[in-house]
Length: 403
Image 1 (cartoon, rainbow, N blue to C red):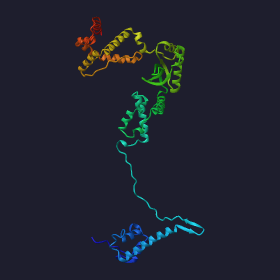
Image 2 (image 1 turned 180 degrees about the horizontal axis):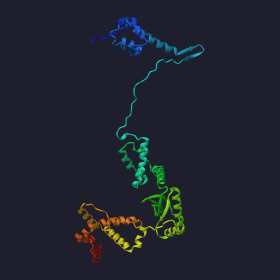
Image 3 (image 1 turned 180 degrees about the vertical axis):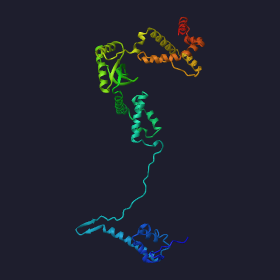
């Protein structure tokens, strides 16, 4: 293909005389600009950078003109610099502000810091989620509040994210604002659910680690139990009249705060609790007031009490003799699927644990019976051990046979 030809309005070719001085001046002064749209760039193109590699297509006269214009521009800059300081006859030189006609812009992008891997920081929303999850984990695992400040725990989380310490809450945060906010949110949801419901209230007490008396107040609705209050009762009176008054206050507070209708009240059936419950039903005859069935079952049913006593003694005997315990465990491993169940101990004041412990013992019945039949002499030998005294040895053998 040939070179492109520029035409005028009449269609005639336009001839450019690059050797003409007038063309150089016209190109520099043209409104459309020149190279890069800047006159200084045209001069630099013709003369070359620092005199190196000048434009081979420009004539000697064009070079001369460009050089003259370059020198003229340098002289103008010097003159403007000299004019910045005006000398006054009345005093020292007065500086004047230079008029800037050009605005220099930089298009160089600043360095963009990129976080990779475990160094990625947490956002504000992520920080909030992590703090709330720390509270949930603490309560779910029954951990002490200070676990989040343990050095080994902090080191563990740093293995996942190097910025983990920036979002891990302190002991005071978990036990303070986080717990309080969670309590407010849960109470609000509970009030919405319990409103206009019929409920059964139950109250029971225990002692905490500091030996303070604590009363828990529960509401049972649709087969589920909800803890609504904890009362410090160390200084409370334990007589029937005082306890009855305390029961009335529990009911009134629950109905006012949660909008429920209490239809029954349950508590222990001994001492002041028994008298207080009976007085409560007399004062509020619309209430159904059953005693705690689990609390009274073993005292009302003599056969159940005897069976419970025997089961408790058997569990204690196995756990108190490590060699016998090992024999029963090995027997479980030989019976498919080979799962070894533990011997559980019931807590005298936690009545549900009796059911759990005895139910587990029932699951162990088959393997224990097989072991007694197949390994009777081994069990007796493990019970007697290295005892040399004849009377004590006979007593241990009788004890093993009995159990």
